[in-house]
Length: 162
Image (cartoon, rainbow, N blue to C red; front, side, top):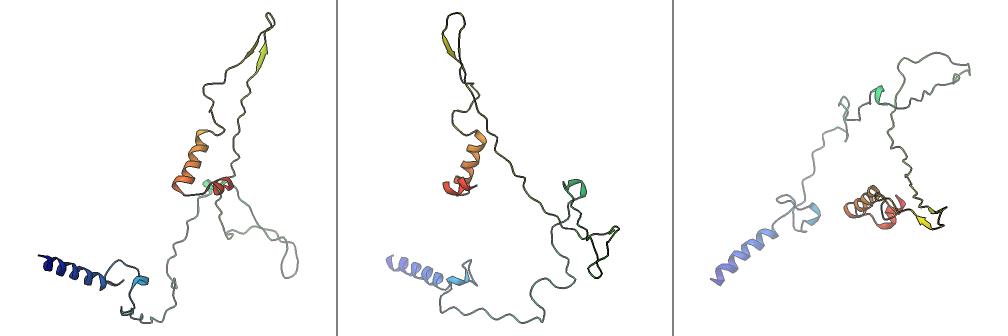
């Protein structure tokens, strides 16, 4: 019984020792020194990267209806002789940049007034609105900070920088 268990365990350990990046999901850096090196790739004669005539996978242009600002950049004078240039280019070179708008935080200040009665002279202060958050930050700010620190793993210093 014990001998059979030890033999089974020995077979499993030997199988694990024979694993390399070629016959398992282990990375090549975990291969033992005894593992055979990968064979060198046969040179194809082509340079690495995209080949001439290959259709690119770049970002597509946004339609003009989705562009917020157009900045027309025209040369003022000829590079050769300095003459003033006029006219239109029917197909100008294009470059689109997408950017998040800067969003200033919305700060709301609640002011609770205390007024004196003109009849009896008693001082009365208004109650805070029930809809007012009790802390210094609203629910969206709290949710964002929770997401950044919890899900994204950002430190408190990094969240303050953001």
